[in-house]
Image 1 (cartoon, rainbow, N blue to C red):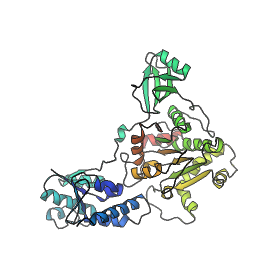
Image 2: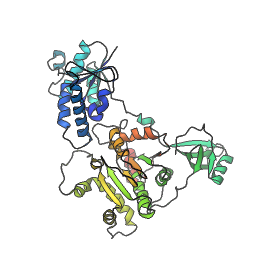
Image 3: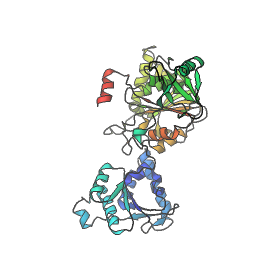
Image 4: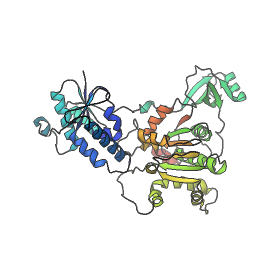
Length: 433
């Protein structure tokens, strides 16, 4: 029997394709959701873009029939706009009907009482899910692109080998494991001797072989790895064959600093890429301070200040008095850009860093990855446990989605950094707070 899915606003703002994600079942959109979609469409961010996409799709569907009666979908289901059931006595005694979430819940409650088959309210709002459960309405999150975050691929594993095999790995630089060894491309391993745990090695899996690290001890713009995960990260960052790199970890683990150091090394010293392009989503932490005055560069400076802090640290060992950052920007070797202006671009031959990528939706990640041109490399850094985006969490962040989808690809590599290196205070705070 067909089911009825009642969609909350946040589902459509998270993924406009949710309109078509329920196969042959009935999709119901409360009228109040249309009002909320309309109120968001003038925003100049991804939420505003999604609101406009939803509005356009509904307008196309409207041409196929009356949305109030129901319109067939390509999947075999139907979509319908339902008026708000604000006058239901059972609901109005419990819920404040002036609140939009409660009006959405009232629609789901009414349909559950009078419709055949299961009626499910789909929402990403934890509070609404709790209220729906109390009202006896079946409710679930929208999981089309969700990842089981606690089980997210970390890029690092352990394996045990004999003393002879470890010695051969050191001597030859690689060890043939055959095609049955359970590993993803560019996965790193802490190799231990099953008879002597102190006899160990660090290695990377490449095409049926365990290979010794080539860049783990390298110095890049004055920065050297301080722990094994940072050594693994350098292997991926410095290997031009790995076109997509994802680095996750708590604050202070060195994700952004390592990426910037290698980016500068590749662009300024080795000249392997024409430019270092740094971007990050403009998502405020806490209450937004509103519009900023000045040119685009002046508006962007507060959002990019963490990047400038890292660059100033990298250049402090060279010449603290020189205007090196401004000089690189003037020469076109360094560019900082808001994600808002990335859409439509093609970016070949550049070393691209997307910082704070945990605040990107899967659609935004796709938009950015598909901008990467021939000869370019892109690095995503972020902490899925520190998300400021109102409609994302660790399970449906675009960063975790990218890690999960790309883990089996030869052009991609991933490492989770664990140990904080910023300071004792920062490490303690990240661990305890």
